Image (cartoon, rainbow over all chains, first blue to last red; front, side, top):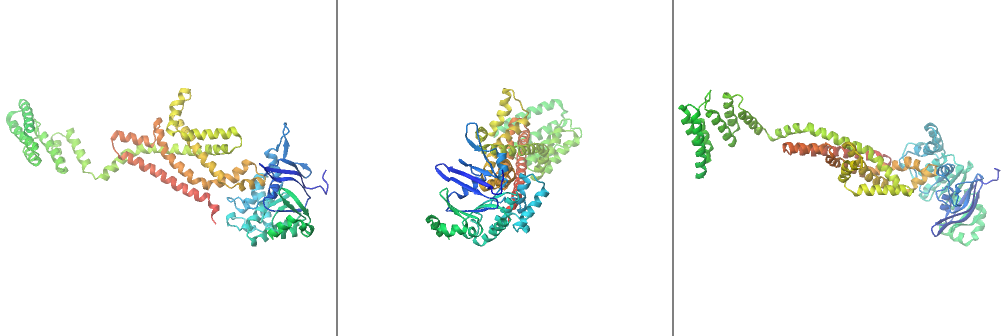
Length: 259
Length: 338
């Protein structure tokens, strides 16, 4: 049964291995509706892999993913071996979870409008008219209505990332995953992307954000998590985290390195 | 030299004796002497002298002895040898005045006219003679090319997707297909399909066999090209497509494959230009296309113009293709222009 306090996403014991390397090692995480979770940590600590696991871009070896109270994504075969659910089910799940990538990954052969329309049009099988309307809405939301007819190649990095956000939003996701959304941007372009994400947060969107921008984490996050070597080392509200967890040697040295 | 002229004159003497028996004696002796002297003059290479001698045999409306027509034909040949084409045909025309249907004189005049024409006129005449047949062949060549262009990209796409499939039997089969059709000569494949398969009870018409051979062969090549194109699209594109909920096939169709078009155009253009020339191979399985037509013309007339024309038609086709593919490449990559 759904309750007000029930987490939207609930991860238990998520473990992902690449050969001998354990990228994510038994991670538990609950994300409540409307919550903004920011994950920080050194590169190679498994932040991106964890995020990608939630969207089934990585197939996990152990653990369960619950979304809106029901376990999703994996089924057990007769022989007891677990494997990914049918492609159709996985596609349906992905369309409820939006993802934004470090390198934008816009479709270069489609116009800005085409990129944003693509999900509603192809995946949700909406009519071109309806898809266009949704796309125009989303472009207005990220402030790029006037760029709708150009190709991505003509946009700046910040604009590209905002289009990518609009593309993900067009599917009306219940959860948004941001995988280092500003890491590929010039410093002066980071602000516009965070403004867009901030506006989303004000609307109550549930988000998990992997980033190296501490200022943003402090300002926006409901919860900050420090991840290292595949595990959560510490977490807390931004005030608590940056005030108290700084005692933590590893966090201290990490923050000193990137600040 | 002496021996030769002696033998010639002996032969002429014998011939004249025969004539003596058949014609009135009056002029015969005179004419004989003239012909003999003319022959002697020819024998020592003095052609003008021979002509002058032969001119002495006067016009004779009846020409019962045949001496007049023979002398004028001889003059015509000598003038021809001296490259005086006007005088040569004038002499032949004198013969026609007596015998309007004289076939030797008629064909002689025709060949003199042919000889007098400028080279380009002869070339144009040959072209007009060969073109209808060659164009028929060219139509067949283009038909073969277009049918193969319709079939092979589809086949190639299937092979490429099959190779990329994670289902082992399919990727294995596609690997085998490419290995087989890329690893053996197209000529051998055509022979096998047209001459070999009937022994297994499978018979094809030449055209079907040709399309089958070309289609399979080019599918194998295009398959590898298309696979390379698909794999050259960066991985993030597939992930982004999946992240908004697309299935594998939707992502391929909407996102990955359209981005390969621009990259595929140069190698596919290359393949199709090679295809235009490879259609010449089907002439070996009873297909009459451009190469076969040119070969037939060349053998019938022993005239190199047929081959030159065929080369020009092939060049025309490949040039048109080159331009078409350049245009398509530009249009396919329009989104990359800043």
